[in-house]
Length: 156
Image (tube, rainbow, N blue to C red; front, side, top):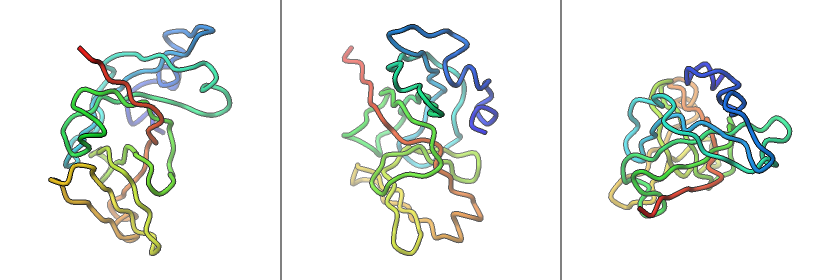
């Protein structure tokens, strides 16, 4: 479960611990995620963000991550906050938080190939894509933990 992995309660993950208002639901920004070579995964709660209350209907769960690195430049910049919907699958072309080897997370565009392999594609041409075969997806494992639904960027 994502909350266990991140070391927070389900209530904290959903923003219930900090309360919600009719205007929105507070969700945790759970740490940083590399937009580069996969590094150690999410650290701890850095901040809180508010999302529309309507997003919290049903089983949907959301969390935020702070971008670190430049492999997804110019789409995402160092220090940006991405809001993710907790998912274990995605559509080809979605930007996702992907966990590799159970302890390394990265933010990449995920391309699903016809043979079942996953290509983790950076938007910065200085970085090569990483391709994982179906066997590698199972053995490492390679797991999608969230799909980016919103970008938040501070101007100053």
